[in-house]
Length: 587
Ligand code: AMP
Image (cartoon, rainbow, N blue to C red; front, side, top):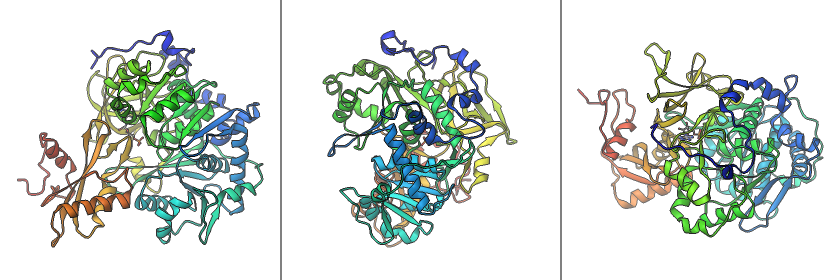
């Protein structure tokens, strides 16, 4: 682990003076209270959107481009900080006119269009709790989340409403208002739905901020566990301090940057680092509406003069697969910093960045619950390819082992594996799992938040990812709960039981494979396999549906009746089956 060569940065790599260079010194000097004061949190008041948008207008940057929207079939659209301030105010006035109250939940289900950004920041400014959903979800994940979150307002497009919401509206009883954006001109609004652009254009663009404090709920991000429904991680307005600080240390944002985060706001990275952090830093962000396409992505990096790029290992591996000759057609003179998150970044990918793009890739680590980057390869020290880097200033990490009596031991010995833990106290730490406080409390032992990831720390303080401590699946950077997939499969009349695992994939990290046992009267043939794949895709959406289905006579269970996914995985991969003493039928 320690023998991996580090990648030294040259002055040419860095091109600007990095935001920090003395890692130990900065860790020593840093305090969250001082950072909050620097961002302007005062007298217990802070609002993410006013810090991200209005603050720059007040400082004289109303005309600076904040967001540049790119799409294949429409021309490039820019929103300046001034326009964003005005339009988010209009959104607040729309919410007020609908009788929405502070703390009510606004859900957003759209592609990466301007209204997503206006509605999200407007909701934050208003003091509503906002939850952006991934627009590639099928109806089941949408219904589950809308109901768990008790959404009263949904912002979506007419086409998505028709395909994914309308037919199931009766199953979402908390929804009072659906605000539609037309995908092609004015939206076709059925009964009870409202035309959002029309409401916005009729609303005043000034709004008196309701007072939000650092502990007021702001964002709701759903994440997956091994069992049960998705978990709604609640984040507060004070989280802005983490977004701002980590934008400085881990992404090295400077006000003159042209920045591109490729993540969708339906996943936490696309909100924390696709919207909030860059705006807090007053940079210009690129937002591309389209999906991955190697030539398109290289053109964006070049044509938008992207200087800081935050992307994901799957995307990097897809670029690697497209070949160096594709990259060679483009030049990226402005690009100066690349970071990646979401899954392990293999050392070859770090080096590929250096060889093909001229820059190494800085892997960093965090998760929905942490709200912001915790561990990172930063400009202040050399990258060790394959490592997630070191804890940022303000973050205390440790490798721990759970003791039999419910406590934990901190593992000091370098190289020894354990669970990655973080000392509570950073501002973007989730404050609860919505309606599941007991599940939340179980994540903590004393001062330590246990992340569910297994890792090692080396003698230089770098952390190395080992794997997940549970059965959740990471496919193309998306965290997927096997239970949600199994439940959707079980709705099909042919399915008696389903067990779902992540199967290693060289590009996507993992793909989803389902093992299915059938009810009496159904034949395990190709036609049924195709039908089940189609059923899952329709209910769950392409990103969450299994790619592969295998029929089995019986699934392995524990004596208490739980499906042993671990065993399914070991058998699939030809690995040792490990401890099977709890297996049903074992002696
Ligand atoms: P999510 O909550 O969807 O952002 O997923 C968080 C999980 O993704 C983490 O708990 C890790 O299992 C994984 N993850 C995130 N970043 C990294 C990384 N740099 N290396 C390895 N795994 C990562």
